[in-house]
Amino acid sequence: MAYVAVKGGTIAIEESIKRLKYERLKKKEVMNIKEIEAGMRGLIDQVMSESSLYCEKLAAIAIKQAEGNPEEAVFLLRAYRSTLPRKHYSKVVNSKDMEVERRISACFKDIEGGQILGASYDYTHRLIDYDLINETKEEALKWLENFEKEVNYEEKVETDISKLPKVLDYLRKEGLLVDFEKSHREPKDVTKKSIEFPTERSERLQILSRGQTGSVISLAYAALRGYGAVHPAVGELRIGNLPIYIDNPLNNTKSYEDSFYIGEIKITEVETLIPIPIEKERGKTEIEFEIGYGICYGQNETKAIGMSILDQCLETGDPRYPTHDEEFVLLHIDSVESTGFISHLKLPHYVTFQSELDSVRKTKKGGK
Image 1 (cartoon, rainbow, N blue to C red):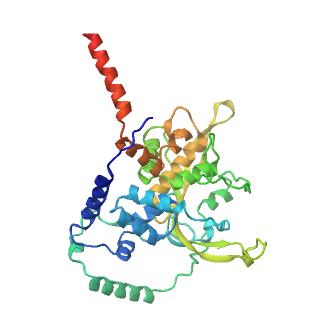
Image 2 (image 1 turned 60 degrees about the vertical axis):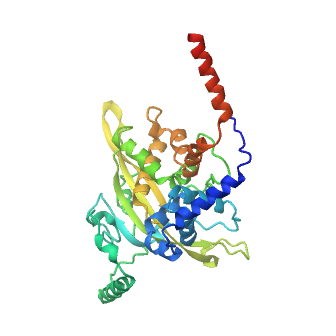
Image 3 (image 1 turned 120 degrees about the vertical axis):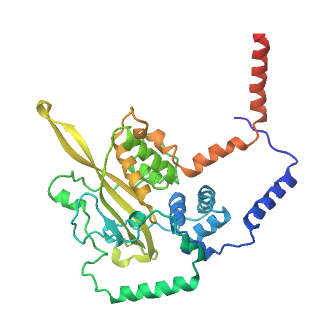
């Protein structure tokens, strides 16, 4: 494609930037970064997930700078991420070590450790709460004080929430799920090398995890509605904090006993069960379960479930359905890629459009 550089527009660009700042400040209120961190948890989690950068403060700054536009905020964080040195690689984490805040299963009512509802909008009335208009900090602090007193008075739960078993382990013990050997092959990193098709599952999971939330959900919904007739059940959805360790940088030992704890991250993890009809001998058909996997930063339940659906679709692969085509899915769900390509249409296309316009004029004259 051909573009023409805009010349002599420096003053106009500077004035445009001033106008942008004016639009952010014209109501004479300045948003505090801490207030964004405290009150926009869902947006922060979404931006961190799509940016592949776990830092609530930086996400809050990007959201403020982008005036709440998640696409722009993700672009800012991705750009910042690209400047960071990669000093260490964390050790492989096991989600069984998660300190669980929320854990539910749509497949089983009674699970070891129990269903933990946690914080969720699933059980609220979707009605506008007009009381929030006049909510004050004093009222909020008072509510927090009373809530913390209630929590302190509650009896301690005997279950260790940091070591809850996986729900799907029940099915594995019964031999209802295929148990694969652990692969110790190093996963590919799509942020260091461009993908080539066909891709490996590690690449697909990484792209899906940092994919644009709306795109992931939309394609997963398409797979549910018709393409492939996929209809999974949520075997387990869990949200909580995972501890992160790195190897001791002072020696070459790889043991956990000598590793360094550097912090924890909140994640959403989903394992879905997809019934698949398998043709056996003499025309018999049996149902087997395949697993779709989804994981992303923060509390991003719908995205994680959508990711698990697309994971299974891409593992299966079927040229008849776009939702099963890895090239179609993986090249269209990236927030920066898709937003950037659409936005580039605003750049000057004077040469190409004039060429097309000349062709149209000649065709019109020739027709007369």
